[in-house]
Length: 155
Image 1 (tube, one colour):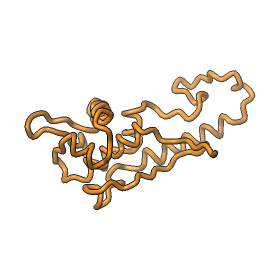
Image 2 (cartoon, helix red, strand yellow; image 1 turned 180 degrees about the vertical axis):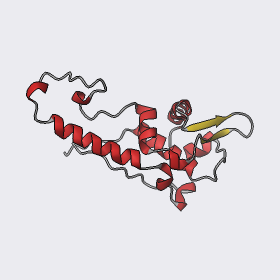
Image 3 (cartoon, helix red, strand yellow; image 1 turned 90 degrees about the horizontal axis):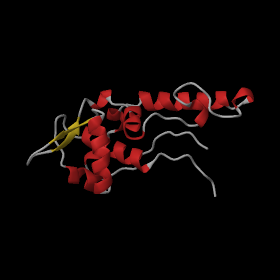
């Protein structure tokens, strides 16, 4: 059985929700349950994800009878990387690429893979940073769920 590096469900669901909101007319407030139903996201999981996206400023929450969610800024200003880092934190494809710049791997003094890991991570981050949410919206996105295909590094 072949193993693959996978995007987590949390990331996938967060992107589904943000793309759904981006498909709406700017400023449109969408009820929580509508997002969950339209994007086939478990409601309990979506509630946690939306809170995280609100905290990051990607999504805005409005309370009341006409409450719901809308984007916190224009879809063209929100990158896939923004969404990923909001729900999962910084991307690090290998332990040696930690945020402090210090290697915590005992193999680091003679490791020949470090540059490969760094190049792979840099290229992946470049794609995620350059891909804005508005580019992921399709006319059908306000209706039926479409599969989400994101580039990812392979194991």
